[in-house]
Image 1 (cartoon, one colour):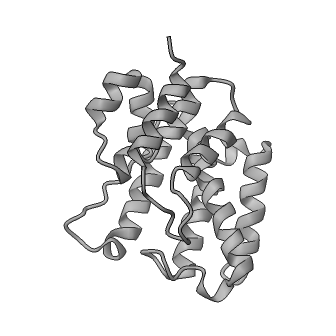
Image 2 (cartoon, rainbow, N blue to C red):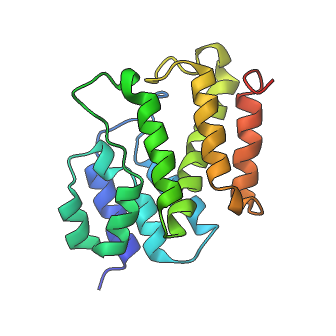
Length: 190
């Protein structure tokens, strides 16, 4: 029988096939894989790692909640759903960005499964690592490829995301996230 994490990796690779990161052509699948690697530093539960690998499939691919439930069960599905934004595809993404981020933060705070916080922290840390690399290359153009180009808004979101999982502040992952936020958003935090 195939391991749940192996199944999740295979599913995510296929679902994200051909997709690239906004920041410059890197295969998208590397983000959910990195998220799962970060989760693995916080827990040994393979279900949580599997949910981390799958965390963007509902939001960014044609995969459905029913497929995830059938293949991976209720808990993994609930964790993936908790990471999924309502993109409101009938409206411009830049117009709904702040609303979607507020909804995501509220959903995390309501989620009774502590695994949601582990995935959330890992996802945001993976993103901040990418932002930091881009920041080092060209800080003036950092947000050009994103729906929200205002660094103050990005700072608002990432500091609130960090604060929402501050109960994990004793972990290396949270401390790295905090450090990268302070570096990338130094001007906005003044």
